[in-house]
Image 1 (cartoon, rainbow, N blue to C red):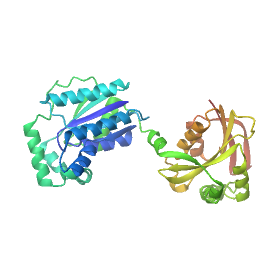
Image 2: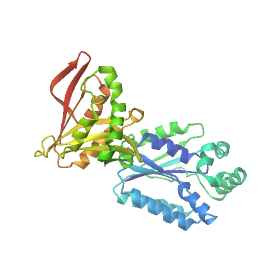
Image 3: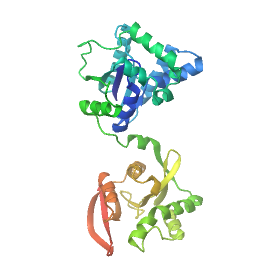
Image 4: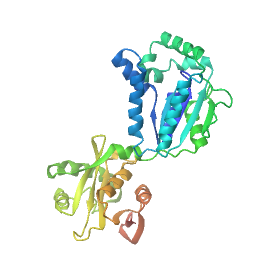
Amino acid sequence: MNLIILIGAGAVGKMTVGQELMKITDYRLFHNHMMIEPVIEIFGKYEGAVVNKLRDDIFDAFINTKYTGMIFTYMWAFDLQSDWDYVNYLTKKFEASGGMVYYVELVADRAVRVERNKTENRLKNKASKRDIVLSHDRMIREETKYRLVSLDGELNFKNYIKIDNTNLEPQEVAAMIKKHFNLPDASSTELMARMKLEEVREDEIPQMYEMQIESFMPLYEKYHDEGSPAIESIDRVRARAARPNRKYYFIVKDGARVGAINIGHNDPDEKKVAFISPLFILPKYQNKGMGYVAIQKAFELLPEVTTWKLETILQEPANCHLYEKCGFVRIGEDKVINENMTLIDYELKK
């Protein structure tokens, strides 16, 4: 598990840059005040030992996830040995997991930081900063009492960059960090964690049937395919659901049903070959990566399967791209349904 430590004085923009960096990478943001604010709310004041314990629990649990890494924000007082020790502690923790640690120091003029101290995003996420007068005076006190900017050559980490973001937008800074360290693009890791497949019960088939009609109707209106799932009867759907070697599953994201998938074996005696038919995502949830994740979840449900098969419409490039992204390749002969529509077969061998 990798770690990016965003370092800098108060209101330099660590959290905001972290938010933008999270959007374009497979890293999750854990900004410092995610633990500080609840502790202040509960205890009525800052309790460092409690904050550190909660942080540690988050670090330890997150290291075991499938994300590439974490972004952590930290105001480092370079004249305090305890802060050096804490950064060293974090470095060893994440390196012990086999990860890399990247250090990003942000610096900005005080006048700019004074204005950033009052931004809507900062006040929304940090309740303790909402008393602007008190927050301003605390920020000035921190930077006069402690040295919050490193000296030239003081940080000799291999993976270190110092950025003056006085006149840079957060998106620009995030892009600079991503490029400098060659960080991976955002992936489906988060969706994989937030989505699951739930077997459709018999009494839930009518709901799934209505979802199927809504999902496939735009394709039917486009191609007028008499074999379209948009116009098949509910009896046919019930018959497919009743087959012991095939199952329907709702595709669920954050507790909401966003589509469905039917998977299983056409031949009950052949457990190494499985089919996906149909797979659909409700129109309002399409083009958000959910179809890809649903297929990965199907693979997890049937790990014994070595060959997966499906068919799709040649004239729908987005569908073809999805299946090819999952590892499927075209096989067999094209099946011309009408002058506007051709069905093609895909296969994936594991």
